[in-house]
Length: 296
Image (cartoon, rainbow, N blue to C red; front, side, top):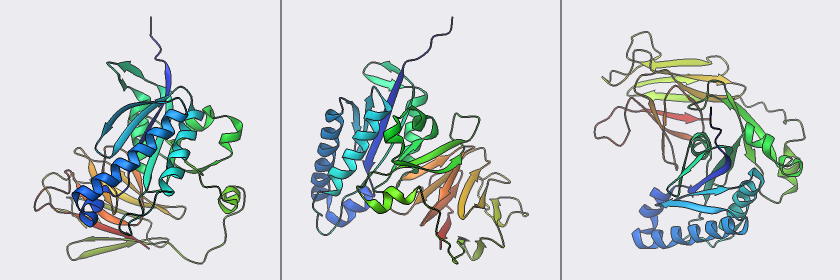
């Protein structure tokens, strides 16, 4: 007989750009600031009857009985942290993600689908943002569901089909509250993304919507790295946004400026701002080849 795992709302949150905080503020000042942020996050979790599962460095994992409680805790975290005073002119920010689904509790820790998906949601968030999944939106109460907006659909590791990704609107702002209800303003700006590898540059946008990267000479950017696949990944322009789609054996490592590195394995990620892409291994290895990207 198949055992059905109980459902939990799993939330991850971490301090955005913590590496640069240590560089700007120094170890002790940055550590004190991060501990203050974690303290505020724990208060928000306790207020919603959640439980802190573990804290690793500047990241915290929590579990809740319902999707509503996780969302309210995530919003409370953002409000509390945004109210903290700047430290040496640096405004502290967090990013958060949560997912409601099956998980297994073992030895005080949690494992399973909800944990893995929640971690992916957090990896998609930027500073000051809360990201959740389409299935979690369906588990929210009608009132809270109105404070979310659909972003896009993407492939999430462990899922066969694309999953809708949504942003939680946590600021108490009339502008943000009505944003999801009104038509998008007409813009004459055509988004572009520039990929650079060595002396080679490729610009994507309306006129050139796709470029592939890998070892084969037929790729738009040929990356002669032994860890790269022949056609390792591609970048696609869709509805005004740029997505990196991994097709490789060893994975694609993406670092968005100000955030931590994310590894994609047969997954896709929306690119934003600027950063670096590394084919087959982490970009922190010495003398590694990287492809830089910049959205404009």
